[in-house]
Image (cartoon, rainbow, N blue to C red; front, top):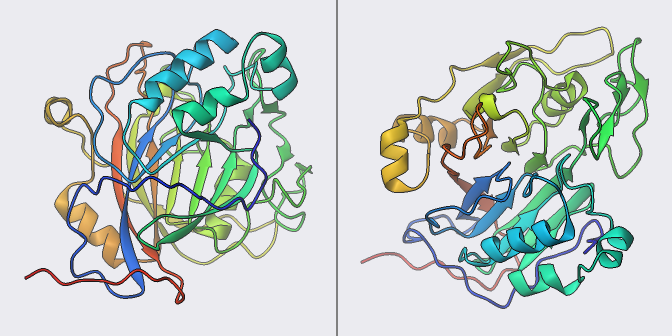
Length: 324
């Protein structure tokens, strides 16, 4: 079930494109992402068409091999070229040896077409020729007794020069988020961004926030904090140059989600105006908390659909055809 960093997609199945791919430039192609998290064993009522599924962890409630197998069966019903998943703090059995010893099979994920991602950087190319790099991490700040946790002062995401004096840098070549990354996929949120709990606390990670400001991905998706569901764009000022400098980002207002409309469509998405502004301004990151469970642990939130224009390698054989 483990996937090594920099594994490249070799899917033989063509995606079902949700929209015509006309008038994209020769150097980019649109890729549609379906983003979900914290399903906790719940099966989506509808399966919006997409190219890539991103599940940001907590597929199950108890993390047992039987529950994980059931969650994989649910994901198998979604039509997508790639289905990428990370563990969450509930997936205590997503340890290869433990999973197989309790009756799970390494082939379970293969049958469902799901790729479990270890912490680290991975690269994928879809059949349109578009490529993207994705950093994945299942870890969250310690809270109670759960899997994949770290102490709040520990910084696993940045080089030592970025870690504040009060922190402890525990990062390594795998866990440090690299520059130039397209997508960051973590289980938990960055501090002060879609991280407000039901009792008013901000449960996000300050070190992860610093890493996002430092690397400026186009998309950062996560879950974990159910009540933080939504999407929010962030705009950058100057970069962090040393451990004493505070980040200078502007958090734009959270995207309005028409819940009844999203329920009818089967997904939430940016408004046309916000989508156009995000596409136009490359100095923005779209953050998405895609927790399906709401603040009352009821599966009332809809998955998110996000479209990204992604670069195609110059050697790609894909040829763009104009619409008539």
